[in-house]
Amino acid sequence: MTSNLIYAQNSINRKSTPLHFEVYKTELDTLSISDVLSNLSIFNSTLLKQEITHPSLTYWMLIDFEKHLTTISKDTLWFLKMPKFEHATLYKQTKNGLSEEKYGRFEFSEKDRSVLYGAGIPFKPENLIYNRYLILKLKRTAYISNISNWKIGFASTHVEHLTRYYYSTENIKRLAPYYIFSGICIIMFFLTLAFYIYSQRQEFLYYMLYVLFLLLYLNSEVFKLHEVFFGSYGLLSYAFFQISQMAINLCYILFIIHYLNTKTTYKRLHVALKAIAYLLVFLIILDAFFFGFNYLIGHIYLLRFEQLIMTVFGLVGMIYLIWKSVNKLAYFVVIGSFFYMAGALALLFFSDARYMIAGSTLEVLIFASGLAYKIQEEFKQKLRYQEEAIRNKNKALRAQINPHFIFNALSSIQHFITDNNKTGALKYLSKFSRLTRNILESSMESRIVLSDEIKMINDYLALEALRFDNSFKYEIIIAPKVEQDIIEIPMLIIQPFIENAIIHGLLNKKSKDKSLVIKFNDKQTYLECIIDDNGIGREAAQKFKRHTNKSRGLEVTEERLKTNNQSDCNIEVIDKYDANNLAAGTRVIIKINY
Image 1: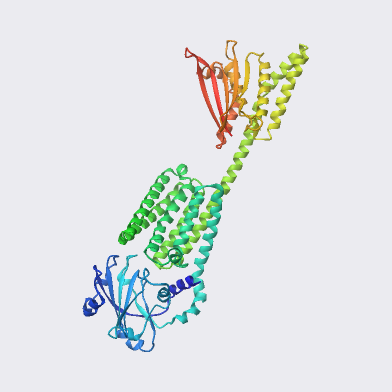
Image 2: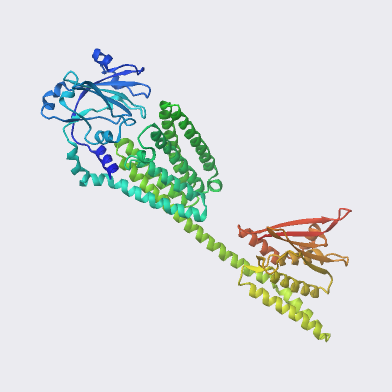
């Protein structure tokens, strides 16, 4: 609770009496308070107040109470109000002489922090130097600011009077956006982390990191994260939270790349996003180098350059996505980025961080909605693919048992019956009925045990041999290591290639030495199926295909493999040639991953 109250104190806009002050700047930090007191004429900032600060310069401020001496004599304790400087030393008069107390953000202790960001820097009327002045030695190293914007005042508000303000309605309203934003970010972080662990998808990783850095950066003051991580608000702590600004933008860019899949959907934008990502990585490294060597002016200009680049790119990117959007995902990016930029601009013009918090909250929620929408659309697409696969599977079944095959097989069986060859008729009728039953039963599953597939192939070859008067020989070879009853393969993947080899390769061959060899080999990580024929080859078969239809089973199988982009099959077709470079058949190698 203490950290939140400190932030509330810093946000209090109580009335204070403005003070006149003069400023003197010096490049060498060797001037002592004695030197300053011996020559107060150096303070003449009529022109100096129009300048901007520089991290390498030291500023001395002479605060004049001449017009308020009567006022401060009415109370024993007063509080000096001033901006938050990184380095600030207050000189005041005490009974033992001049004393100095450090109140810079990079210097003061936890107790001093509460005093400074509460009522202000305490002083008593007797602390005024020459009964008139307080002197401050300042350095502004974290930012560049106009000296004319510095406001110094004093008030008599006591620290104990602030307690009632901490729990006031005004203060609760002021802090509520920070608590809401923090709660949303924490919920989104853990939800996205869970999704990333489950799916390993990069967009969830970068969205999670984006939310994390956004939470750390925007709420670093509210929850005193400087002290939590680094023990104090020092240069190292400042460097971390400043560099986190660029980390936010880097995670944002990487999130957009993977969320929109810009590599395929927005190729020009993808090139620009990659360039920005590499630039941000370079700037982060360069900024860390600047902090390492205490070159803070380099950091200031680098940060301004980065903010300019991201602002211009953000505007151009939103326009490009509106113009070239290929789906609704782009609109989530555009709308979310718009609210974030609107909050940033409102912060710039109104100097109220709550606008930035509001814009960031809306962006986080919109991006989360975009991720949910993307998951939903991909799920619907997966269902469409499954429906398409089922339709293709049914087509494949119909192609496997085509009318010509059924008619010719039954005609051959009828021929056995008319020849009174009951044994042959019953034998082949049994094979035909078993093949038909197995194919229909297998239609309920997408994969089949290899041993069942081999039985169907064997029955099919026997019937095909019968159809064509045993004009070709066939052989099925199974390697000893192949575990037929364990290995599962996609159903009806092999048969269409066997049919193609018979119809177009072997039957068109004039010589009688027609053979077909089917081999199954265990390759440790995949099953290798080789369909080897000594037919006329693919080139010669093309001439016959002009007059005959392409095997419907092979056509449907190729369509299945193209539709299923996660197919675990790899098919290679090799043309064979003899010693005279004449076509000697075709070898088809099908690799099926285990």
